[in-house]
Length: 202
Image 1 (cartoon, rainbow, N blue to C red):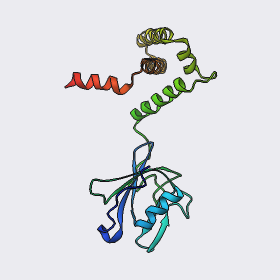
Image 2 (tube, one colour; image 1 turned 180 degrees about the vertical axis):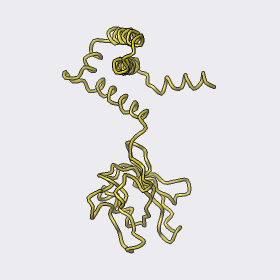
Image 3 (tube, rainbow, N blue to C red; image 1 turned 60 degrees about the horizontal axis):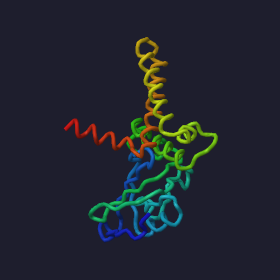
Image 4 (cartoon, rainbow, N blue to C red; image 1 turned 135 degrees about the vertical axis):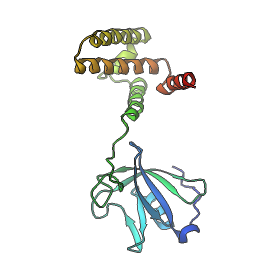
């Protein structure tokens, strides 16, 4: 976190808009306004604080409902007059009891889960545990990991010949997971593969 951000509070009569985004799902949750005191209190308490234009006072989101916005990171836009604040929300954000002030469900695009899964796999490699199946594969080495990818690919091909969607998707998930383990074992990532696909598409 950069606590030396340059904020131009002279704009907007001392109030700057603050876009609130879920750090995990990347959904925009709400828009509030901050003065300098609210900004400082947010950094000090770890809970997002705004300046309420209707109450004319500092207002910590969740102070009545308990649905706090737990501060994770903050950025300024190019003009230094708009905050982008990433949070972990504790419950619905909107006063209408919806996840966001736009009535959206605060769920991540399921494709984003692959990034989370990749980080978990990397952690299993960097911080092995005897209780982890993934860590045990890394311990066995690249040949065993590559062999598992081959086995899972064959099992997926076999299931593709039948009409059982549950079994087919289960094997597809197994293959993708072991493929991601292989990438991490080789020091590569899904992003590296995406770059290749993007170049081919262009």
